[in-house]
Length: 204
Length: 204
DNA sequence: TCGTAGACTGACCGTACGTTCAGTGAGCTG
DNA sequence: CAGCTCACTGAACGTACGGTCAGTCTACGA
Image 1 (tube, rainbow over the protein chains, first blue to last red):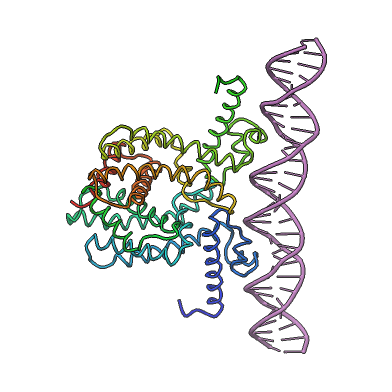
Image 2: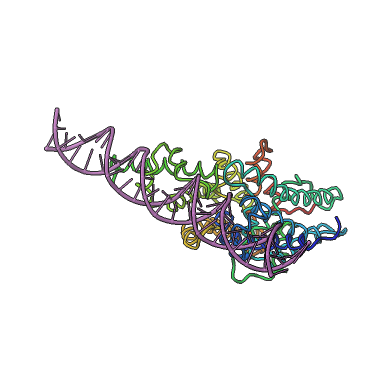
């Protein structure tokens, strides 16, 4: 991989521009209601141009999902780096997530539709190849962190995978709530709320 | 409301049949990929017949959501009746939910898409009128139960609405996982897992 | 038995969307 | 400057779907 030629840079820039536009439109209208026409307009190119960079609509949507979720995961992973205690890691991860969605309000709707594939079996297969691995990876990473904490006796023994799911989806609910409310409590408060519940449950 | 005439019974039966078919197709393909043609075939009627009972596709989908979610809520509410402790109520609710989804595997995909509206503003408005209130009501019911428990000192003080969201979505994650796995732990085990986490957190 | 009402059908219509491709023009080369 | 290249365009095409309605069938009452 030498330095990029001018053409490559332009090429990558176009891809970026189109994906960004796709992300905004999907965030606005939802995955299925987002049309190529609107994405093209949002990107400031003609509809046909998109097909120079993406085979078809499915590929565009899949790649867009992939890019977006990769960004989020990177931010969360980064936040959990180092050998802090589990509680600190959780707090950091929650903070990173809330920050990401604050900077990137539009993305949450796209993110929500990551969970379950839709449409005909072919689309489902593509979704399985592209999006699900990303989601599974992020769940898996949290699961292994939880496992380590269990081995250290930092927390009780549970099925780590189920626990990771519960934590991720539970906190997603709060994120969604934040995005839909016009005014929310401070991010600090929500991070604290989540950490409290997860670490200590609700018993007095 | 006197006894139903024969016509009314037939009428209601048709509506039931069509809604059941719609539920199965939506569960299979997702809300947006479900076509009137396929729903009609599934119901064993002609496409035109559906329009004798529902104004348009939107109304069919909305009514179907409404009916399905109402059933689920009724089951969960019933399970939480009586003056048991919060822990017992939670356990009963979780059990009811898992049972419902076991008997009704197909429904979970439809249930998942309840959260956020898609499409143009008009569809979003309809969704807001029909589905969201149901969801909000169920969250609200749990929130008020939690509030009572807080007042009794049974649990710590939290924002009851956020707490309800966290619990519902966290346990949904487990439901989704169960539905997607080929073989899951016993329902008992998952109910116990959820109750443990929620009541006592993960700290040893 | 005939006639009528109305439930039901499915071919048809309009529309909207994904995809294509002949054409355009900006920019590079000789 | 002429000629060529190729990224880009957007009108046009095919398809698939929601919605319609003229026609068919069935059941029931006279």
